[in-house]
Length: 392
Image (cartoon, rainbow, N blue to C red; front, side, top):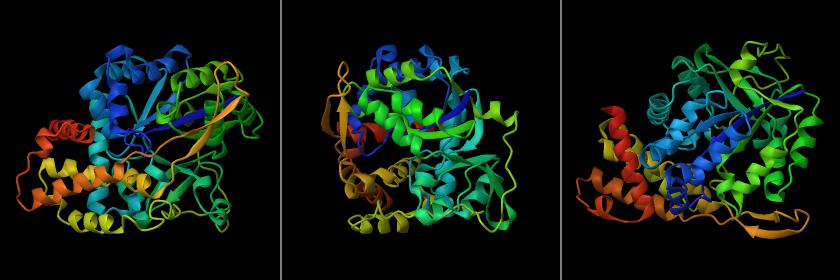
């Protein structure tokens, strides 16, 4: 029996997920695509450790509270973990910026869900040693790392079993390594309408306990995405036993003593060259960092706009090419066709948010935020209202 802990990052601001598509996925209550996606895990009794960004939760509370009810009604299927409000690049955050993003995320998760595990999934697997210290002080018990997201020389020095990651000033957190090759195995099974690769990768592993990491929004980006994910769940081998984090903490999930001089004990510093490859958004980033020094004086509206500007997918949409994948057909999975998953215009959206924020900080009044029918503005309006409820 292979034990799997399936850790899912759900980022409603993903660079390939247009605001219109995301809002439409929430429409229709129990008939909505998002409700259907969640319900498939209930139907097939497949446990997942669900890492919903606080912004996604705000949107669900606004446009589809039925999805929140569904998650709360099935604690045997969904385990919630801590996330920030916005999927950002933590290496660019000031201490106050990181704290506010984390706190708003935590408040949204704990407001809407009954049972939340004190593990923090960092966006893009980016954390500084100072942020590890902050999380430890905030009561977080553990975090995650994915060696495949780092340079090859670092990969060899990241432990492959749970370990204590060190923060500044003597702090530490339990750190759980995820198996990087399972991300690709999941995507290939999803794209190919064939779960064989996923099963083979898991069942051929030497480890009796495996932690996977993947994006939850993948099914929303491709044709027949829901059918593909349901097929993947339905075809998963019965020899794969899904568990939650707390199930394992009571049965020996303890950091092993490993050679101190061979492994990284701190959280490795992640390169973000993929997000700043050609420095097209360097000026944008510099303007945000200058503004971030004034965070403590921001109104709720300004905090909402600032959170939108620090989304990592603004940079992704500009700097990263649109991925081309090969999709298998439903009844003929061996017949593959190319499909381009287009990046959204999130770069433009980021500039729009930043213009609104800078104008507000100068005391200028603009009705664009109140009246624009644009989906990305509709989204930030709803999130600002939700942040107001969190701070009331």
